[in-house]
Amino acid sequence: MRAVRSMPPPGSHGGDAHRIAVALGVDPASLLELSATLNPVAPDPVPLLRRHLDSLRCYPDPTAATAALAEALGVSPSQVLLTNGGSEAIGLLARVVG
Picture 1 (cartoon, rainbow, N blue to C red):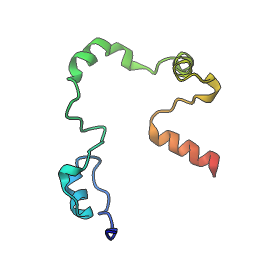
Picture 2: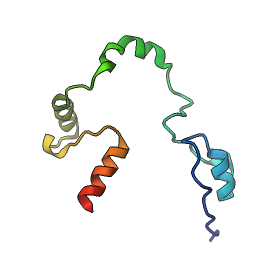
Picture 3: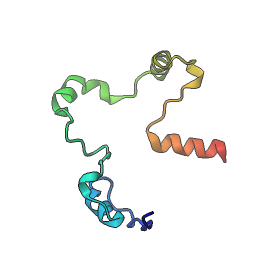
């Protein structure tokens, strides 16, 4: 079993695959970078933004979005909670769990 090495202190978000690989003693090519800001196959966002720029001015109706997601998942809307990202979801969960 390989010894566990300590991770380097956190830096800027994403793009640290090489630094992490060195800290772990693995080949950087063996890591999969899952940062939301780094996607080598992402489509060009400009055409999409141009088509939907006006709709980005405000949040969508949460009731309709919750109902649509609940239907897609086959659950009750009362089992779905939409948040403003993972950080909010984790914070809410921490408050509930204690």
